[in-house]
Length: 415
Image (tube, rainbow, N blue to C red; front, side, top):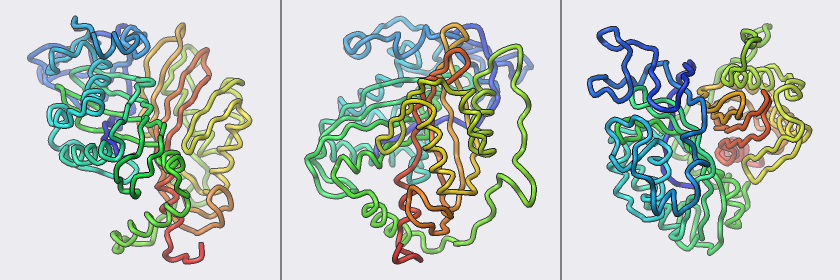
């Protein structure tokens, strides 16, 4: 899809506080005192590693109720400190859901100028999109292609505050009919129902960074396109614009020389820490290729939702999917870039994890015969964790863009 975007920073440290409202970061302000959310004299600290994690679901998407309450008759009493945000927003969930609705469904596209910073950074399947004017143009393009578009908020994970920045991971289901022209071609008249995840960071009513990933491969299939043909076409067009790129590439840093992957510190025995748990799970499954970790980290009845319409039930199908990627990209090296979460041991946790990987297409598998091409993958996942294991995972990565990297003609004209 071509919608605009919102994202978090790469901070890897987190401080857990006791309340959803007005948590205090642990880092000191200019005078040595800790900056308090809502304090008009406290300066913002967007690069602070101290990011609070909500310890409950008092402020959550499911708590908001249905359309009448959430969009048509929203509450008016502020529920958490939101210094610099418009008075009509009562909490960060309210802000994200309602600006999305106003921009996309009410078609108040110019509201982007009030809710995105002038130099906002948006990273999507195509790379870095810089500045809010690009966001405005992309939004016009998408609404023109899908005039009846609807964006349904499916889940929203948040962390942070109005000092260090609100981090939100917004999973959205996008529904509409393609009755206008798009970058993919003329109108098809077909209906799409696809989902995306947008990870944003916002301060003082403006989103200033966003990572957004769309289920483009599923959308294109629903529009009637052959994925490989369209990937080759768009890959060739991108390669023509990028003819000066050096085709050489370095080693994927998973195992260097004759070494082995690094070990991470042991998991804490006295408590469950969602961030440490997720970093461990991803590192040992993907970088160590220890798929036995899945037995300990995922529930037997796991429900998995992924790109291109993938839906798996149970750990066996999930393992098979991971094996297919590792067979296709034997040197794949994955890095966890960001993790945040909300919840507690009794009610469970909702988590957001953003990751990136480099790999070389040297194996037979998902994408045909090996081409030797280096590819860059990145994605966002959301998990529902209960009793220390993952029961549900939503994973979106840039699969169609990976296919463009692989299927373009040069230098493998017969690939």
